[in-house]
Length: 129
Image (tube, rainbow, N blue to C red):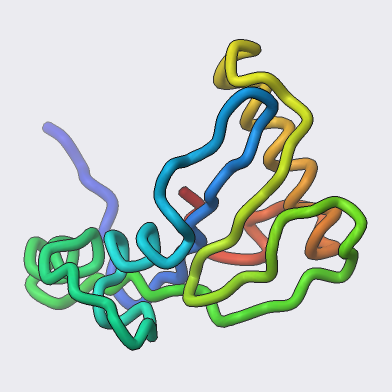
């Protein structure tokens, strides 16, 4: 018999937009925040009525809510990227997309640690995507 974890309450989410060597996410930070949080993103023009936040709320009978991480300023401007705004951040990495998922994830993790002076990105938010 399966025993599923019970997760309830409010959980913070950080949406990471990546600019890598040879490629970058085509959507803007605002568009990504809108697609994940909708109007809860705090964006004046947010208009995505069906988004990650709305669907998790619906499926959990309003017992689990994903909210955008509060705005936060980078501690260093030397490594590119952006501040956290409306639950989203842009990270610049000197890693080629062709190097693979693990290499890319490690590069993104390293940049977030440097940009926000944390020992692990989980210190920023409950969930990072």
